[in-house]
Image (cartoon, rainbow, N blue to C red; front, side, top):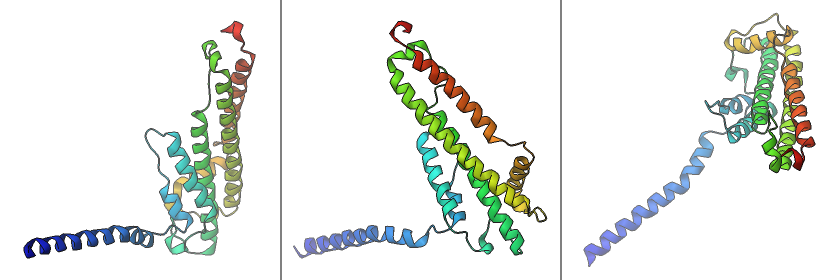
Length: 211
C-alpha cells in the first residue's frame, strides 16, 4: 500500500510539474520575442510558392503594421547607417519598399476574385460573379493607393540620392525604376480595372435568353 501511494504521489508531482511548465511556456514566449518595431514586422512577411488568400491577408497585416510601427534604433536597421542623411534615406526607402509589397499583395489577392472572362454558362451565378468583381475592384483600388504612397516615398528618397545604401540595393533599384518610369504599377492596375469593367459589363447584360 505504501509503495502504491508513493508511486501515486510521484505521478501527481510529475503531472503538476508538466502542467505548470505548460502554463509557463506562453509567458516565456511572449517575453522572449516582443514585436515592437517596423523591421520586426517586415521580417514576418513571407512569400509562398503558391500564395493563398489567407497568406496574402496575413502578409498584408504584417506589412501594414510595419508601416505604422516605429523604426528600431539605427544600430539595428537593415542597412549600415553612419549618419543622419543615410538614416533619413533608409526610412524613406523602407516605406517605399513596404508599400510596393502591399501593392503586389493586394493585386495578388484581387486576382482571386477577378473574373477574367464572363462565360455564358456562368449566368446562374451572375450575382455571385458580380459581387466577386466588386471585391476585386476594391482590392485593385487599394493597391493603387499604396502605389501612390510608394511613389511619394521614392520621391523623398530621390532628394537624398547623394548617399547610397548598398545593403538594400534592391530597394535602391526599385526607387530608381520608379523615378525613371520603368516601374509603373498605375499602368498595370489601370489595365486590371479596364479588363474588370469589360467583364462586369458582359455579366450585367446576361439574361436567361443568353444561357
